[in-house]
Image (tube, rainbow, N blue to C red; front, side, top):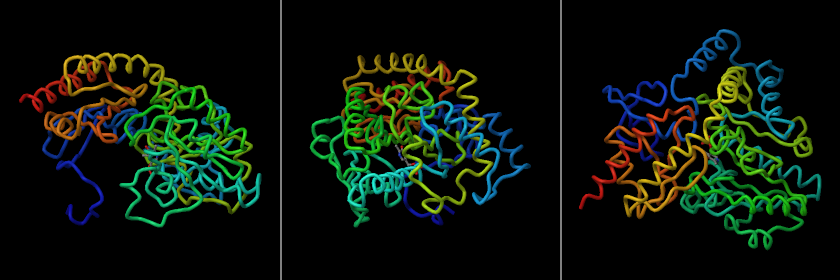
Length: 390
Ligand SMILES: *Cc1c(COP(=O)(O)O)cnc(C)c1O
């Protein structure tokens, strides 16, 4: 029964049963076009045959073996992530928030080794989102998520996003890390300026602090490059990943430069399920599809196509104020609350999710087709017309 589930989500009144590609079906057989993709998780859509095949094959081989031992899939996935990045070592976990916790602990340990126990301050951004566990929540700069769960972790400072002067004023010798999302997702699809990231990187180098990119939402191909940082041309010391990394199977990871990663020694951190062969096998398949089947290479073209279509809505309707974001992590800025439009789209079989106060997030699977984009924008247009007909 639904009432057996804790009341932590405002959900749509629908129960889903199955999906294929960008389409999902509820228990009554109604079809929906999924432009939420499990909130940027289902990068290859639903029930991708390669993922299903790997799940079955690896399930028959080996699903879990503790990190007391090595396993082939974990080693192969780490090697793959390293080979496509400028980084050297990986820690595996199961979710975005765990990846952020890992990065925070790594930052503290690095700080301690470099500058003693006073080098422990972590700077985060206003309007950020890094997850729901206590550490990640503490660096999530949004009052609504934090206010009922005080006291949170200490040793933190927050600054406005994309404001280099404020960061300059906040950073000092005691700073051990700066954490940010290259594109703020939950905060409203707000991209960092490239020049800002360059300056943040320079400040972090100057003060010997780690630069941590939370790519949980914007990474894994969503911006048209495997890692988000590659689309900005600024290399962080530490990258947090999850969401798209498993294409729907839970997995998270932290990727770091050798210099940063070497701060961890046995006993410093751990994760029972992290790096299990089943999750790693699925992730290897996902990365193989994304990289070798041209999915990531197709993202920018799809992005331009979609931005063009959304720009037409902006011309037609006063309520649509702009298109923001990059790649297939896009946001339609609207006047006022987006909820009425999102609900109307849902009625009409198009799934969308809000971001921030006034943005409709558009995060389809990365293998979405042009026809599906056409259909989604058509539904969106009808919904706007109906909601604002008076
Ligand atoms: C979703 C998200 C998280 C949290 O991931 P979970 O898997 O829900 O713990 C952290 N950071 C960003 C940027 C996210 O979008």
